[in-house]
Amino acid sequence: MTDVRASVLIPVKNGGPLLGEVLDTILKQQTPWPFEVIVVDSGSRDGSVELVRGRGVRCEVIPPEEFGHGRTRNFLASLAKGEFLVFLTQDAKPASAHWLRHMVEACSTEESVAGAFGPHRAHPHARHVTHCELSLHFAGFGDKLSVVRLEDKNRFAVDPGYRQWLHFFSSNNSCIRRSVWERLPLPDVAFAEDQTWALRAIEAGYGKAYAPEAMVYHSHDFGVWETLQRNFDEARSFNLYFGYRIQDSLVQALKSGVHLAKRDLGWLRSGGLRGWRLFKNAGYMSLVEMARVAGQYLGTRHDRLPAWLLRSVSRDEQLQRAGAA
Image (spheres, one colour):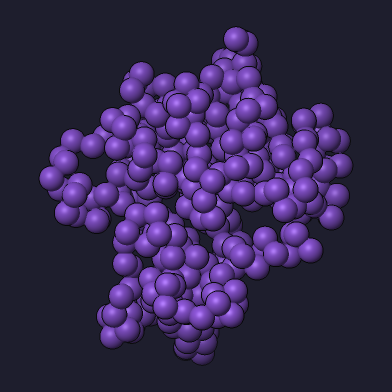
């Protein structure tokens, strides 16, 4: 169809200066084959469209109310020419000039691989706990290129941890084989479109690759309220789309919050904090971790909450309402 091997696809809204850094890094990627970059903007008011087009990158514009995590990425894919569809977010900056090559090589390592994903590392200015948390999470996938698929159906049916490990995927830094996307487009869901897609791909018998060298800098130091909202959206989506009940017990949620606060305290100490700085930062992280488990608890029990509370605690719904205004 085309000699373009990979299409880098980015949904954007108010990307700010970091979007320029992301695009500059992408355009400097060193690959042995041609690639393209396409952006779809959904109502930026900060000059993002001009920033993108000023770099010679194709930028299509849609109304804010038409945005959907899966829907917009499917639209991006429909515009693409590449054999491999590489998805990034506007704040995920490739860590090297070989990021794209490593991502596509992982996705093309076997014909049965539907998609690949790479690790996230915290932005240099991020808080120490964020650096530690991301490193710990992605260490669970190993340090070498690997392919996994559904091999133990009995375990898959009864072990949520095994299922979550198999279907973890991230639209912040991933690649989908075009021929698979044509059969399995991203679902039009409110949240977790990436993991929902990966679950369907795994259940359909495809493999999923992990590309440890295709790293991006992507992190958020959410505050207390944003942490609650983010975890509410995630827990609600995991319940709706996967049947998981992440925090079904208030007592267990409180225990989890205490455990996470102690973990953060250890990380802060390992980062060299002492005295008042340690006390202040540990206290703040305790609030963040309690907000995390509170969001998970509310999200797990979303079907029992009044409509006004749902509207307040869902960050994703608030962003969409703001975009439609």
